[in-house]
Length: 595
Ligand code: G6P
Image (cartoon, rainbow, N blue to C red; front, side, top):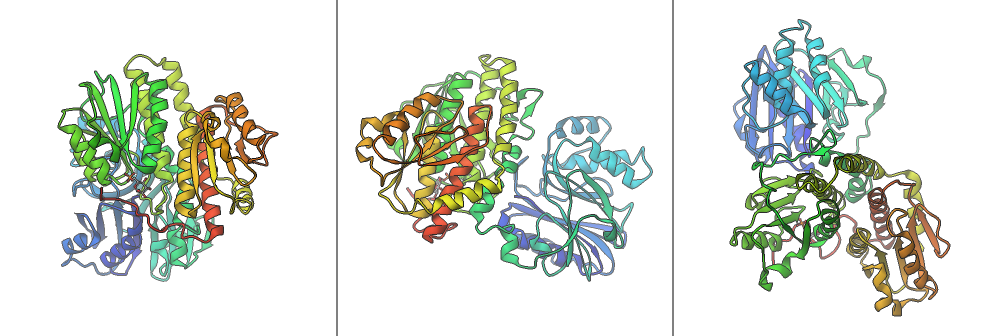
């Protein structure tokens, strides 16, 4: 995930900004850059890859005396990780860094190009600094020009802008992406999270959404909501959570909206494929993935067939290549991978390319091997995921597949415009449903102590809740080392019901808006045989030993995302109680590059 730092003061700015960026390295990045404005001169340095590359680029540069500076680590979302796409972006006399996504950057760019602006990057960010300099032609007051610029932006942003017009100020804006301003003995500091501020700032203000302002050495006192900064670095990196996995679960409502950003417009899904005709003439889809990504693919099958009306197969990558698969000419091959490096999936893509089929990567890491190998990519934009057990990557994979299903439904003329519009609204609601309530988390913490023994877990569900059951069983296995299986609830009676007794824990996914009565009868069959039932639903179910209530929803996909969060937290809290290493469970790796 991108990171931002900024500084106003007399300390050596290059060292300070790169030091701040180093504190953000743990969030993952693929390029970095800094701009220093001191003694009227703007100096900008950028480099692809790690910070040492950036340090080499500016080895001979140092600033002295008063000045302002900004820095950025970039995690590519719009445009490849190249030096031109790295921040800060510049126009004639100003530089900008930005986290988030400017949804309407295309319109702004077109308009500015007509006015003679020349763009050098593929990013959405570059429009900000050009728009600002364009506004300065109309508004002589710099802050007014900045405010007018921000007023035209749609999307999520944390922005720092410096300009030779006002060399003692940093202009800032924040909406839906975090931005903090701090004050310490040596000046004013900016950052997108606490870690770079520790040891430098004592007091901080966590900016609210819609904040637009500027800061100079004397401006800090005018800020609202100033608090003391917690100086614990480990705590700061996890944003105050106990584990990265927990932080990532809590982040899902934000990253889900990011995965949608710029991809919907006026009730339609839009994708910026390099080839505008990429999805035309596709008659069938094969999705290929491993682990959690495979489960997302299974959810995708239901959605693609339901909304895109396109036949979809889902295959496990390690089972695909050696089975002499048959691919049709107009079959799209979709590789899903969080890391983009999983060897089984990568080799499957290479194999399919020998048949000449179109390939699409759904991936969280731009420029990864799978992304480079595929014809087109849809990035999931979850930001780096540190917990080995995938949570937010899975959530965004499902969201992107859902967007793809609506996109194909529209493109193929099989989904009514009104239905597409409704589904997009449901997507936003579903993202909101993943915001964790303390009440739910506390309830799960308490409940988890009753599920530490027994001879195993069955997670059961139907339709999209079946792959969610598989994924929930995998989560529990991965981090608590307890045996768990996911099963289609209608299939329990064809075998596994023989295991039912009071020591068999069944976690039943019971959505109100999808096949409720059917799954209810399946669960009743188990309850009648004395299995211990924990039911997840918005609706009370008499046959349950424990109820885990989700908040009322109006669509089954909202229920899907609500239950997903509850089940991730359930796995986490059981793992905490059994004392396993939640972020780095035994025998597992985040990225598996062997067959
Ligand atoms: C490993 C990880 C899993 C992950 C799978 C696929 O096994 O431990 O959590 O789901 O790889 O990884 P990918 O990066 O391709 O999604």
